[in-house]
Length: 292
Image (cartoon, rainbow, N blue to C red; front, side, top):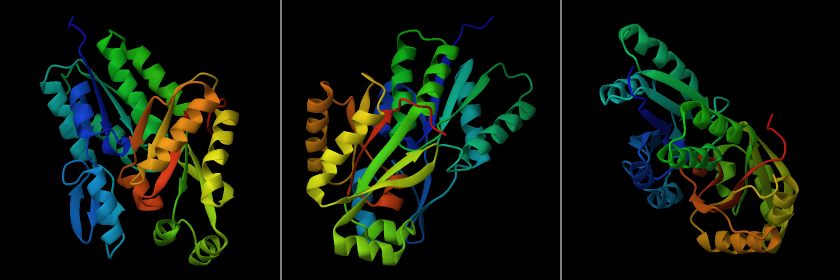
C-alpha cells in the first residue's frame, strides 16, 4: 500500500499570493484575465497592486475567464507524476464560475486516460470568491503540515465554505457602474447623495444589504454587521484593496469591538476588483448560519 502523500490545489481567485502558495506547498492554477485585448494571468503577469493601477487606466473594462478542463487535467497529471496519492482541489464557487464543473470533467478524463492511476482526486466547491475559500485552503495547508488526514481537511474546508460570507463596500461607484452591477442612474444618484452600497456575497449570490450615507459611517456599520453575523470567537479576515489605511482603521475597530484581532489582512484580486474596483474595504467571516 502506498504511503499517503497529499497535495492541496486551488485557483488564483482565492487571492492567495504566489509567494504564500509556494511557501505552504499549495499548487495554484491561474485565472485568465483579458485587459485591453491582452490575455494575461493573475499573479504571473501582474501583481494585485499592479492590477489596481491597470484597472484605473484601462479604456476597456477587464474580464475574467474560466480555467479550462485541459489546463486542469494537465495539473492533475503533473501532481500524479510527483507521486501524490491524494489531491484536494478547492475551486472558486460553482455558482460564479464553470471552473468547478471543468474540474469534474477533467477528473473524468484523467481517469479515462490513466486507468491505472492510484491518485485520488477530491473536489471541494469553494462556494464563493477570494478569502471566503482562500483562507480555508491556507489553514488546511497548515493542518496538513501538522498531520491532518484527507477527510479532516475536506470537512474543514467544506464547513468553512458553507458558512463563510464576503462583505464589502466599494468606496467609489465608478467601477460597479462600469461592470454593470449597478445601473448608471442608480450610481449617479448614489454619488449625488453620498451613498455607498454595503454588499454581501454568500454562495456566489450578491445583494446590497444596506446603503451607507457618508464615509464616516462605513466602519461603524460594518462593525455592527460583523457582531450580528459572526460565529462567536471565530476567526475573521479584513479585506483590502488599494486603500490600506481604511482597512487598518476597520481592523482596529473590530479588534476593540470583538476583543481579538483579525487573522490577517487579505488583498482583493482581479475577480472582485473587476466588479467593485480597487477602492474597497470589507471582511470575511464564518457566519452563524449556513449560507444558502
